[in-house]
Length: 218
Image 1 (spheres, rainbow, N blue to C red):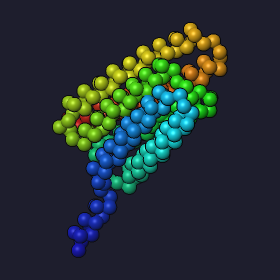
Image 2 (cartoon, rainbow, N blue to C red):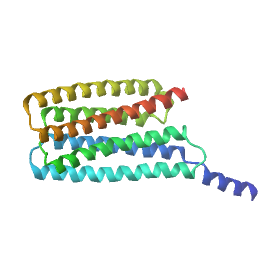
Image 3 (cartoon, rainbow, N blue to C red):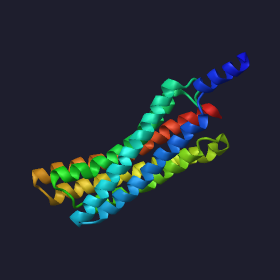
Image 4 (cartoon, rainbow, N blue to C red):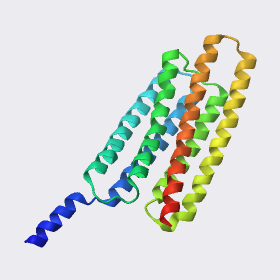
């Protein structure tokens, strides 16, 4: 009887370590789904399509928030975690940030009445999609340290993609200041470029956390 009681107590305080990875995977999947929709949105000029894509991104962002909350709640309820609690929190928040910035892009565009994206913004949306796909690859491999070398290589690829985004953003801003001297347009476009940059930077933040986790576990 005592052993059975002890077993139930341990089951209550011990996590299903795999559940953290399941939730991380779902968050990474949300990032890819959201970036695909954002890439479609950036390429269209029809307002109805813009609103349809925006609604879909909002739905994905809401779903991601639930996964993030579940991860953070699990940290308060469980005793043993698959890796450091701080890193679990940082990884969950960085993944959620990617999707938050994805939602902020059309949100700001709608507020500013700026639903037509520049060619550089279209390119940034495609770069963000590539980065999100690499994030998904790294996250999905994280549960098995046999994948350590591949994970680290994927993290490096995310960093390279982030560098490409910086180059595209600088080119876009340079062209904007050369061709458009309307202050309101400049402010609106700068805000959107910044949000694209933050979204890609969040992918690199995920890579940095994962890189640290892997190095500590191999």
